[in-house]
Length: 138
Image (tube, rainbow, N blue to C red; front, side, top):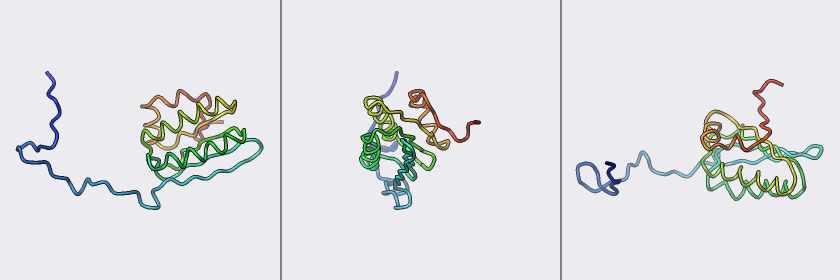
């Protein structure tokens, strides 16, 4: 039989106390999401670096939508990300749907192991027909 979670109590019965070592700290400027857009011959590359979390979603979505609205095929390059949570997964799925609705192609560079792990667990890699991975042989 599974026991329900207990909230707000320590094992010894006393009130729970916050652990200052595990407190939330806003991302430093060098950890925040950076977006670089480059264009060439009917396509664009949206290179993301830093950390992609809920605070990054709106900015990244606006940048992607601006490129899609111009009818350009897009490569979303996650190679520079140090961290991505489920918000990044949402960004990719919604971006793929928007690209498909506009009749443009959205490809993906999955990035390093921590980001690739999130994408694999969420099943997102399978949603992209073309995975542009610089580590793959030509």
